[in-house]
Image (cartoon, rainbow, N blue to C red; front, side):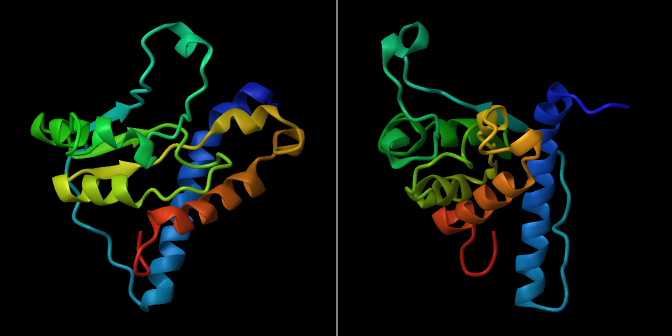
Length: 165
């Protein structure tokens, strides 16, 4: 089968997830000789992308798409409406996000990640896949290096703590 742009962009999410898994195994292996898998339970996840826009296209404004930023804490945190706790109260055990990795920002994601852990939610970060459409990020739609660098940067922004993620 020929690999088209649509296949590559559609596969970007799968590639990103593979990179996260490989990085986690590498981190765990570096910490010990034994890598144990956590106990499995049914996934009850919620996709979360509640940008604070009240009109189409945010009225021409361009707020950051990364919902893990502290600027959105009034939405997801306990000092606001506490969306994360509400998800957990509804029975969710995971939250899937968009644009958490791969943007140019350097802000920490620790506040969101810590609060998600506190209320019992696993976090499934999403990659900003728009770079797949930009040849300087993904030459000939080969995004491996772009996603790898985004993953490694994510570890410095809070996804890795104390040698684990």
